[in-house]
Image 1 (tube, rainbow, N blue to C red):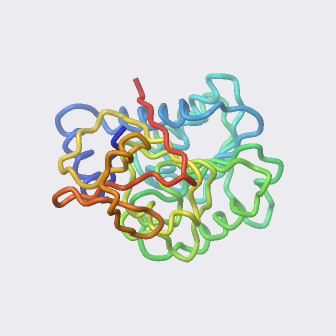
Image 2: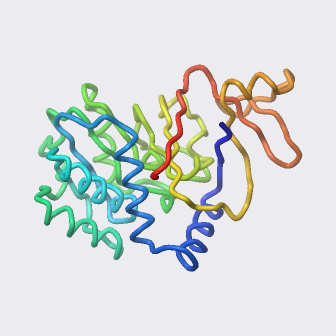
Length: 254
């Protein structure tokens, strides 16, 4: 297993080329949400907290799969959908009977959750978290009895530069197609497990990789350290070693 670690620009450019020549943005969001659905054994009281962008759209689309399996997720939106794709799946989720409510930080809406899905901020995030999103992130982190799942990247973490001053601490982060490099910065503070879901995007540029335990054994013993990871250099690329504290799995939408 060799998993791609990518920059935000590489990921976005690769998605753009695929949407221009192979498939639609709606289909890609469908595949991303299918990966989310397949990554975990969903049960109990599920609450999905969404933002206005396509990370939120993945949450609406995930809710469709859950509703079709007769689970009853509740979506709390910090803002209304701002993209065509998010609006499409929000409408579909509503038609399937999914409750979609405004997020209110003073109402303790995430109480009694078995699973909380973080779909607030995706790879478009950089800088500092706005106050309404910060409050949602803080409430998610305070729900110690719930299992926290982040979609693609933990909210509040830049895909290139790592954590801001407020970020979701997840039990499982389900990365779409590749691991965004910022997710691995100070990773012990926000990660426990990663699942990487292939949705059929061919990357335009090869960057760095994360290796599984078997491939780790073949590396030179002279490893270098960067943040919470050891790595070996392979030409202009880095081969990162999966540390013992992090579980990593892979899957496909197919």
